[in-house]
Image (cartoon, rainbow, N blue to C red):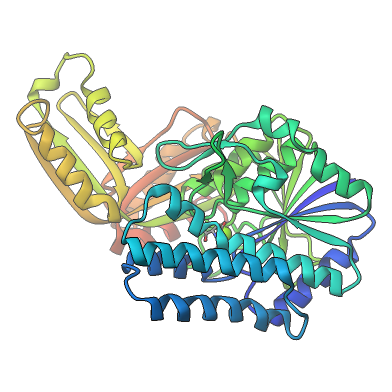
Length: 451
Ligand code: ASP
Ligand code: MG
């Protein structure tokens, strides 16, 4: 049995967590395990903040490097970090000094610098496993042969080429050595680092599960699994034992930060079963994610993504004119703005974006004003509530039930989105109304009492 085990930054926090990780791998030593790891908690954030803050004095680089090294050494609690670790720390230092002296940081250099969180974590985890009596070796994504190409927002794996490179990994497995692979990035044809976006280690783990023909993909988290609702809105939410690939994917898009939706993309159509496992209760059942769920036609979860805004653009000029939507969204896409939800009428288009993208979006829309756009309206504090369940929208009257429960709760949705699939429906409400709406929906669908 071949298993890919993903350990994210959320659980790599201190010496105790590293100890726990080793114990979990030890207890599953009968299988053939491949680990994929993220940077230690907060390390990627600190790298980003450091680069964004303008690297302009040597002293701060030195302090940053020292702190980064000791962050890992403390976790290793007495196990000596060896030459490989020192080498990576030195390289990161040189990169940052280079940026400091030249005051230049290209996308290429920045991506390389950001990949160091994962590099240091992989070395650290491999040393800890070795010290616990488990043969292990770190493999940077370039050594593991993860080939990727840059995309608009984040990179994507080239699966066929990556699959040709798995010999290094299987070679280690054949010798009983656990490969500890860096998440978050791959390498393009020029040997440059391509990042998979924030939270991208889940995607790396999905890539590995696919190309290695794994039986199992275990994603170890600091939560029990997927829940029947966003616990911030509905504290009574229950843990779900089983959900389907499409449900997991939809829930990811609706803001459940359990599994990056692109992970599912990797394993769809393969024999891989994914499993969300509880790092703090390793033998608990967690959530199984399967291609097709046993109990279908039921809602699984009510999720919520806050921090979005709704933009409505209106123009009489677009009635019957071909290509207006294409131009609008094409222009936004060129600026790297992700649009989550869209609804259109003959003379208006409403869509949602992340609140952080608003200034950028307004600028882009300004360019279109006078040609395809007459006016732009913004509602800044909105939340997207997603109701997810495999095939549940095939039941009669579901939309009516959901919308009337929301109306009874006194909430007027800003947008209603009934997508082409039967697996979800979603509403956009004011942020201030999201909890009221989510609770009303939750109770009306019989998921439990949410009062
Ligand atoms: N370290 C990266 C991040 O913080 C990747 C990950 O954690 O999955 O986004
Ligand atoms: Mg993560």
